[in-house]
Image (tube, rainbow, N blue to C red; front, side, top):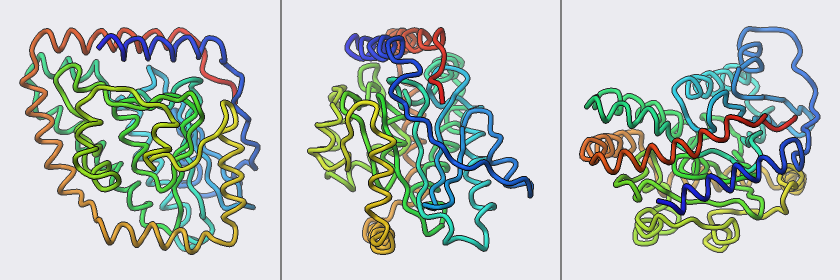
Length: 318
């Protein structure tokens, strides 16, 4: 457990050193005033959204108010984000070619599930609340896996650490761009749990069940280079150059996008992942939560305390 607390602390230190640096500003035209879906999409509190019409790219950066994890209010913004994208491009589906999700927290992509909420609901034996949280997460994940039923290529941009559910959610993108120095892993096994909102399903389809189990159960952290070697990270970028590497990928795909999009669609036919599978695993996860000991919960809360130290520093400048 101490290794992951230390990893969060290193993210904290890196944030302190690099706040406002190494994050190229995405200069894109502001949306024109108009219909309600567009107003909602571009005014989300914890997601910064910009539309780049020339390349057909919708850039989104996470800006959570609290610790950089998926708290319930943050999940509501993701639901609104997905709904707004579908509504904005209804009837003009081909205009949206790429959907990019990154983070404005220097050193952190996302640290995963709301561990403070988990500990609270476990101590009160509130299984229903745990299941509801998990179902909300996997429904968002499943829509992203299916590219919102739009002819779009999705890109996850990790300019910092993606741990637990943060790594889990990153796996739902067609293409993953990661900066060297970013770390990936699942700390859940260190306090008696497992990542129950898509990790096993997604990893097993990419690298096989045995390797997926090894990664989930080890509690080990992996580098961006490790993930690239495994084929999970597709593009490695130098620190601070993730946005530019993503732009370069999009530019190079200019004449290949149709084929790429079709390949990812074919992949979903070959190895389909149903919402039912994801929701059944959430039930397994919720039951496992209720078996945790007081020692396990104290370890979980130590990790929450480490995450909380991220709150005291300003979010990265645009």
